[in-house]
Amino acid sequence: MDTKIKLPCRKKNYNKVGFELKLFIIDQIHNGRISVNYAAKKYDISR
Image (cartoon, rainbow, N blue to C red; front, top):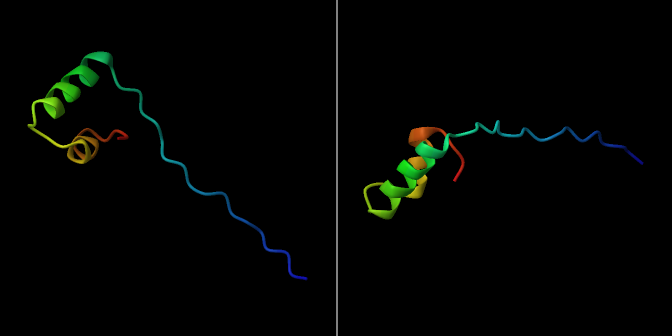
């Protein structure tokens, strides 16, 4: 029987975001200015 070595998967780095930035992004999403996916890409944060 062959034993396969499993490589660990790459994990995304988690960047802490300040509370004011969170509120700013949530406000923009809530007002319909940007989407959740666009905000994640623009500010380099997780959804």
